[in-house]
Image: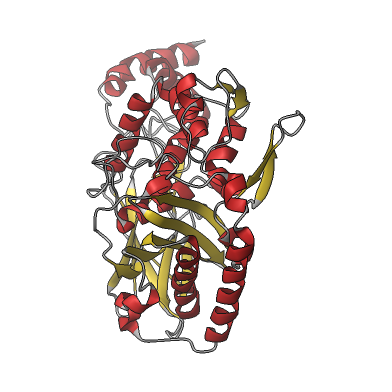
Length: 448
């Protein structure tokens, strides 16, 4: 009894020390850690069935282009100046080739010119839809009712009728494969209440991405004054969209059906023919209006290398596809990527005091990778790990430190953000009191 009484009295005397604790380890000295390792009304887009009428002609063009690019594979270029060689896409008004992992630009042509981008606009709508799913605000099984406004959009569509209900998943199929204006507007109204409010969300998103050459007036990409983007901005938007891996389950499918068990069965054919004919292609979005001409945001992956190719202002879909493949071929023929650290790799563990977790793991926020010419030798790299923020609370996605990659000579060549693997909060007063009693009982208290 005396021992228990003394413990309780001692814990009461310690309470003021814990009440004053507002931050965790704020005065903890941050150390570096080095690790060495080898390493027209319907000008927006043709409807699915109309576009399918011309697929034979387009498929022949794609097959011819494939044969040409296969022959070019043995003539790999190592000229580092080729990144601005406009002969890769002579017909495009603008274009870009970007590594999807690092965001490094391999090729560019008028990348910042503000242009109409047609249905490529819908990539931002897709980002918002996927974010809403991931946040739990909507579900794939939710039923969306088409308004008169949505069903009357025209252009490329899945022919929604006013009052028709369709799941979010099927709407996303329509947007991703058929570039459906009606489905896009229906989802905009479902999420934001109106297309106007949804477009505000889209413009907010591009600002968050730091894009300065993009502004939207509608969610479909129909021609409208003041509605524009650029090849670079479209590449960054595509890179952001690819962070939501679910999109590839829609964009990679060549054909599918809607209303399959009804009398109104609808055949979907992907407007992006590269997903069928180009090795590794699995997205992302086509576009066509009178002002934008023919546009394409394409992505393909071979081994660890994923590329994003953008072409804007092409004269027809055949040239659009051919020049997009030229960009992708150039990237795959000449470049390689080394994935040094993935988002699952724990690079450090730190101890936390008075927190809901006593230890927390730090991982890269994005994969850490090195893009280089195929002709370059593999190198060894060292890593400096710097913890810059351990103040509670901490949430997944918060920046808590940096990982700095250095080459053999010690030169910094890459820097990435570190985040935590779980959400951590401060212990409240009662939790802190209980932890103190527990530590005292098991002998973990240090009274010195």
